[in-house]
Image (cartoon, rainbow, N blue to C red; front, side):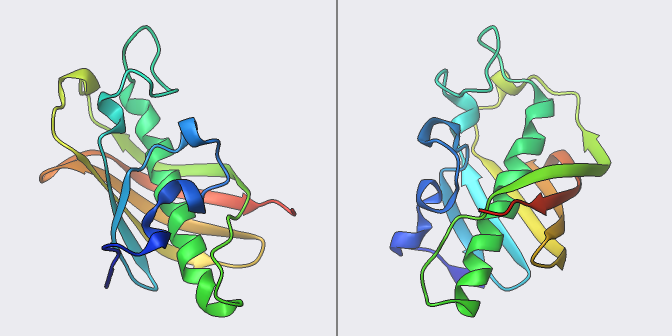
Length: 151
């Protein structure tokens, strides 16, 4: 696995087509051709755009998994292009086998770890499984299918 360290590509905001405030993942820890591991503290920030009534629903952890998936796709595709990381636009088209723990997200002081593993990727879409964890505790997991959008 590649550790991101000080690589300029380790900035998720530079790799995702989201607006800066909607990028929920703070750092990419490591990745390889099949998977990615990221971390974030954005669940603790009141500026998090998914907060409603000063609280973050655990259901929003699906978006964290989708962003890890998108980051992995961008990083993995660099090898197939001219060496430049380019965001890929896509839309979640299906969720399967999703489990979300009954948890008060406001009580979690630790960083979240987000893992995503590729099951299938093509030019038109991708399927990944994801996990969002705190330590060894799985807060959310499932399978995400994304259809890529023509840019």
